[in-house]
Length: 124
Image (cartoon, rainbow, N blue to C red; front, side, top):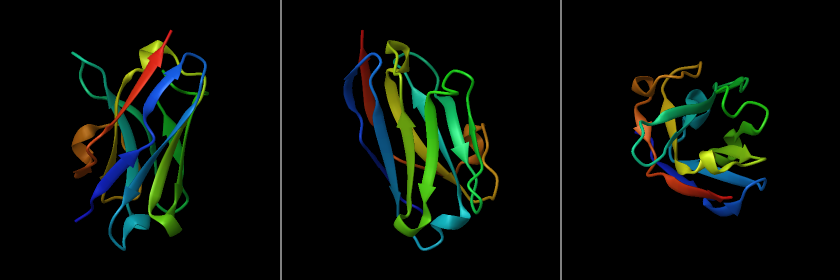
């Protein structure tokens, strides 16, 4: 069982930055691939990026590539989402998720554990 708690969301102007954190419980955090997703009002939850266990290989969706960076600190049981050059269309609730596998995935169904989400609002 893994429990996830996101933090770091808030209101920011377009062009600004935020760093989201996702703290995980459990002693096996390092063995889990982690993903970030987001959901805007009236839209489906969409993939943002993922990071593998072990070597921490990352992958980002085209919509955020070059602006968002995922990292993890296994000693702190935490995964991060650094968001730069934010745009109003990045406004959403952001969720982290954990998958009991080595490689990350774009698919929501591959993740067994989810956080409660943190709101990010980007004003124009």
